[in-house]
Amino acid sequence: MARTPDGSLQSHKLLSENPERYKDAAVQGIRERLGLGADPPIPEGASDAFKMGTTVATNALLKARAAVLFH
View 1 (cartoon, rainbow, N blue to C red):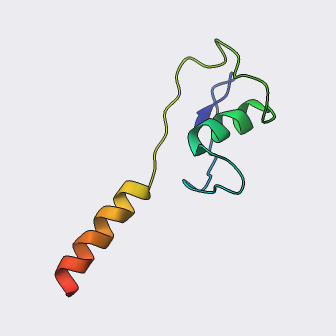
View 2 (cartoon, rainbow, N blue to C red; view 1 turned 90 degrees about the horizontal axis):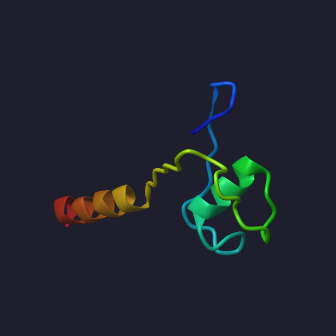
View 3 (tube, helix red, strand yellow; view 1 turned 120 degrees about the vertical axis):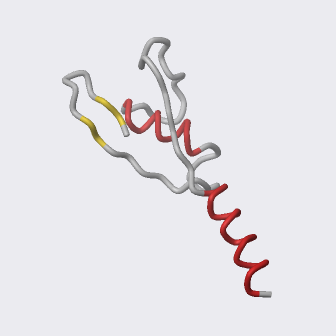
C-alpha cells in the first residue's frame, strides 16, 4: 500500500520471489511506486516510511503445519 501526497491509498503487489525480474521484491516495489528504473538510487526523503508484507513466511508455516497434519 502506498499513500500518495494527496492522501489517497494505492496498492502495489509483486511476487515475493521473482529472481528473473528482480533481486529484492521490497526494493523493486519501492522503485516502481516512485517511478524509478533499475539503476538510480532511491532518493533520500522519497518517503516518510516504507512498510511491506510478505506471504512467503506464512506459506512456509502453513505448508509445514499441513505436512504435520496430513502425514
